[in-house]
Image (tube, rainbow, N blue to C red):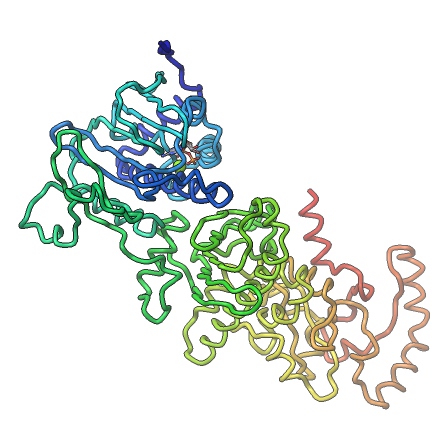
Length: 595
Ligand code: ADP
Ligand code: MG
């Protein structure tokens, strides 16, 4: 006879539970979402493991890939059953007694850094322990395929017990969680149904909720009896829960929708994409700016829905990591939710799903990341995303909305990193850049717009670092000759702009020239008359320029007479920098960065 051992929760677990109970009292509903998502994770694991070991799937009841929710108002309980992977005794102790898993760990770190727990639940699952939001006693019965069945019980937030289950009720495989409710309203089937639809409608496994039998309830019309399925071959997903007292109940299948990405885009209303996006990101407040639902043909066929979130993630965090948060399914089996280096880091803000029938499945996740198929898919997806951005810009042009402006305001830094790092797609990305100019101070224009407006004979892009709303910039003596000659000058108002143009050097065969640099030959558009004059002046002012050079010594490269200021009677001289060296603006920026 096995001895019952009482385990203490790891200190972090007790802390988490305190935070949950104190701060999420108005968000208790999420417990169901968390338990359903754990059940779905467990089912995915079975499906995944059974690809290499068919025997794990089992037969009959065991093979059913579904999630059941059983409310009991008399007992004041909710039971959640899945036929997922199940947990061994050790796994029960570790998984439900410590915080070793990712989501909850990050949640705790975030709370430690001062983020409100309520703000964080949207981003991270808070996991199994959210059961204690609604229950004061939780019983988990679990069994792995071919293993022994164990019970985990906790009556409080301090300790739990684990022992072998001798009750004789065989789960065959999976997990049954009984919540002994503190709040009896959660034993109501209709309430649970609403919650499950709200949070878990797109879960890729059938979710059934047991309803009290009521012939007048119209919902029961689509429910299925489970009286007589005993000796029939049971199709995966059909409810067949047999109660011990022989009572018959109806189950309602709440997520009958086919996975949204398998449907015809023409038949999916916008609201459903938005809901899907929210369930995917677990951010129930955000609305995507744009999405693209498509299927790609070719060597590697796949279907995908890609979203650009309304709220961009922090630039720093996204650029530092290598992770791509796309859900990758292969034949409807979830293979990975986050994986490294699938998309380049400047696209790490993209969310979505990809489902392919053409990727070999009998490889490990690690190998999959290295696989050629995945790399090809990644390349295609990058091109699709850039196309989505172009579509927004086109739409704005033709329909006059401001989707692209909104997108650019939020994501321009990501695009700029892309311009610098994604050499094969550089040109397509650079087409997406927008700048204010001396001819368009309020409305930013593209480099192509600039090209079209170039003066005859103009061979380069001219820019000045700074913002047109800054009057110092607008009065800069450097600008004057360009204004006088009607040459458009780009304002690089974002500190990274200058680094970017210095990095890429050219666009469409035209190079970028900083107008605060020493003039190059190509900008000198003076007449022959001026040229002769200049020669003469240079000679005449030699003593002066020599005096400056001698006085300033090493601090200047050279001092010379120039015609660039000839129209400006107020400015006798300017300080310019050597072509190719950092502008004063960039130097200032670098200094600030290094402080
Ligand atoms: P997370 O899901 O982020 O890992 P949870 O607190 O929700 O965190 O769950 C903790 C762990 O407990 C899971 O990672 C999993 O290993 C295990 N677990 C929870 N619920 C189930 C279940 N229904 N079936 C199998 N394992 C489960
Ligand atoms: Mg979880």
